Image 1: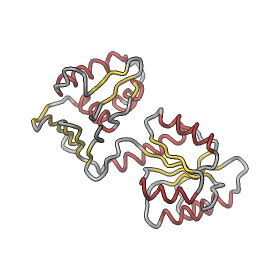
Image 2: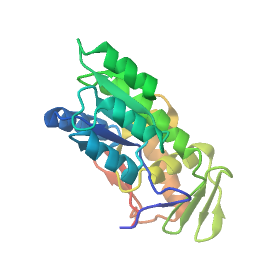
Image 3: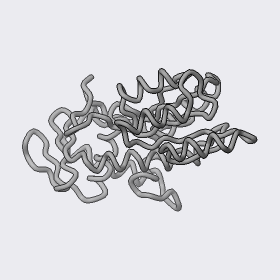
Length: 234
């Protein structure tokens, strides 16, 4: 399968780099964040975190206050020489407040509680991704091209007029190409609410969107029964 082509960046979902020596804690956080549509890469120490921060260019980095090999203060200083992504510092109850203060003075963005809580981390990572996403204007998958700034969709070079909600639905599915997104995620990210909404509302919009895109056999926008939908890039 081919990844969606995006001007300047091909990432279609938020990416969080987690540097923490507790492998079990990283696995637990990774599973929870991935369920919310966030890609997570975990490393056990500051040296590997520096390498991956440069190679992956994540939307945000989460490091624990007891980061080994390269400590949190030195990590933040090194990252700030070339990167502007948020660096979050995980603090245990009773941790050295002085170290947290030094990391913040070196350029860390904020302190968060450790063990990590998804409701605390998720908005920070999503906000960082949206700031990056503002620079991405055109997404192309197969014969479908979506221009974010012009609010225009083309299929095989021909303009297809979509109502605003269907445009936003297509945009969300293309940003998360090849990933199954749940109905609840679609409600939150496209309708921006889950109150009083029926899953049939989403099904109706998906059906109309498929028809407008010429996806007559549902091969591009696939239904994952009991879960949600997946837009396939291949």
